[in-house]
Each structure stands twice: as structure tokens, then as C-alpha cells.
Length: 202
View (tube, rainbow, N blue to C red):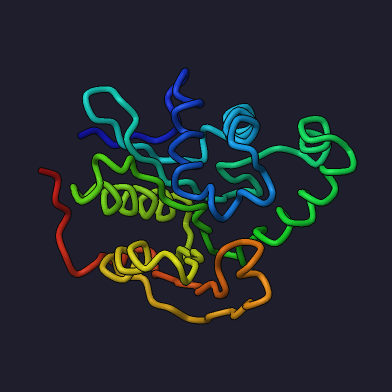
């Protein structure tokens, strides 16, 4: 297993597929259908805003983060309108705005972790989190912040094992029917803190 910074050149489509597999249910109302969403994500990735895990040279996981005003997933409003059309695009832009998160001074905001289903349970998520933590430390950030939705308890359990603490839960039951979740919890971890369990890479 190799962990590296940045999406490898030529692996943008694979990165977009992993990201969509992890977050397609949440992003679907804004970016569906998948045959448009995945190419859109691949075309607008900021490759330098990710850490990646490779197994035998194959991309099997990635974690995105927001820093310096740029995050892993990009795409301007005009790009959304070009891809989806003006009328439908405006509706999609409104939905995408619901997911915007801006870091406070001294924060690195994570943009989600995606791991290939066939390699889950092998410690890849923990490796990715620790590499993001290293990036945060190098950038003199005081803490890492992320949001996890109520329908993803597996991710929340991973974050808690790696030293994240829940600080606030925003309940949005009116979004459950539209986006598939009704609450999002903000979690934080001080930079330099390690989770209570060691990394495991079988």
C-alpha cells in the first residue's frame, strides 16, 4: 500500500468514480445522472487537494481537503450551467450551495474520504486521515474539521477512532426526502492529535 499526495495523472476518472461511489447518494440530486456526474467531477478535480492510496499501482482510496480557497471537487457555476443547461443548472447550483463549507482561520476542512468497497477494512481510511493531518501540520493549521451525515455511521466511527470529536449537529429533516439525510455533525481534531489505535495495513 502506498499513500501519496495528489491524484496521479491519468487517474482523474478513477478518482471521480470512487468519489461518486462514496457520495453519489448525497450529491445525486445536484449532479445526476451518473453518466454526467462522473465526467463532470473528473474534469473539475483539483488534483493537488487530495491524498491517495494506491495498491499495486491502482487508486483504491482518496481523501480530499479544502485549503487556500480550493477543494478537491471544483467546477464553476458556468461549468455547471454548460453541463446541465441553464434552467436545470440553476436548480443544481442551489443544491450544491447547501454543501459549501468554509474553513475558519487555522482550519483545514476535509472534503470526504472514499475507499474502494473491495479494499475496505484494511486501514486505508486511517492512513488517508493521518496523511491529511500531516498536510494540515505542514500548513500550520491548528485543527481539522469535517462534517459527517447521519446516514454514514461507519465514517463517523472511523473519525472517532482517529481522534475527532463531535462539536455540533445540524438537524435538517426537511432535506431527508431530497438528499437522503436529515442531520450533519461537525467534528474536529486538533492538529498533532493521533487516534487511539495504531495504523494497520495488512
